[in-house]
Length: 376
Image 1 (cartoon, rainbow, N blue to C red):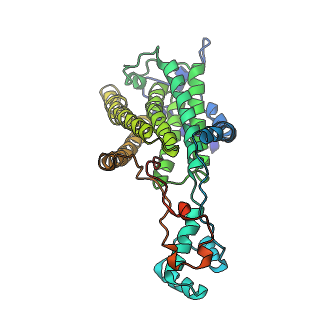
Image 2: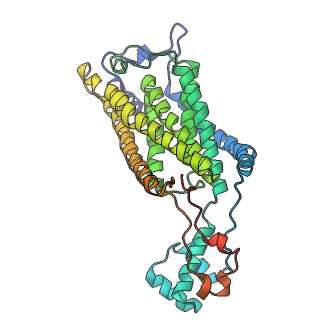
Image 3: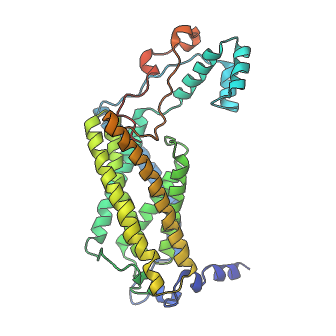
């Protein structure tokens, strides 16, 4: 039964155009071709990248943050309230109005005091700028290295390339060592991002990030197994080249370098719109979706790959919308602020709060993060 399923899953008519068979992709004459088994190493490599990331953030990003003057923000500490703490942990971080009334009655507090306690409690769990800087620094370093590697791999290849030829079987590309490491490291990195979503700073577009990471892993895996490495490498470098500028803008934002952050974000926006809303749909997607129809009959591999590419394009439009909102704000307030940020909530005035809510470090902990430090 397993063999039957395996034969059906790897059917040539599902994965390959009629002009290619699996035998064409077998190693011969010293040429090595891609194999699905190559992808097994991406999981242990992902954990290896998480280990490298830990040491990078501790011994590179942390000293760099200190050099920029980024410190951990001291937030208001509150005296633990067993009733509210139990509700916060077991029920909800944001209780309904009915729950607030009930809790206020149990604690013999006013409704405003209970609301303020929950806001302070939520703010205690919000990540500080130091952690955000470390995350952005790690992603910046990786994207920079991989972009340089990608350009080094592709610079002497025909960039303006008829990608439709991949679908009709020419060239039957052998695997190069640079291609192997480029793919494996990129896929391992996205696995590591997926594994660390629970501990990384959570943003409003959390679901979009999950979908993006899964789509990226699926696309890379699929393009690898079917030997569509030409389209795969181009998709990866188109994404990485914009992310460098975004992560660098975040780093300078957390450091309080407003003007530098603004300039880098504008550069990112230009690169993003050119690479993901022009080059990606009108060149790469056009070559993989439209041109093949003139030469081959649609088959599962063609349909599945292009569905994933179109899903990525939908995400590009989604993030493009957010970028436009940020630019719109910038035109009016002259500062870049990321509309996706989960800023600290403004806590009610302390005038009428009980002593247990005043047991913190003063107004600096109550105020929102300063303007210009919201690019995530």
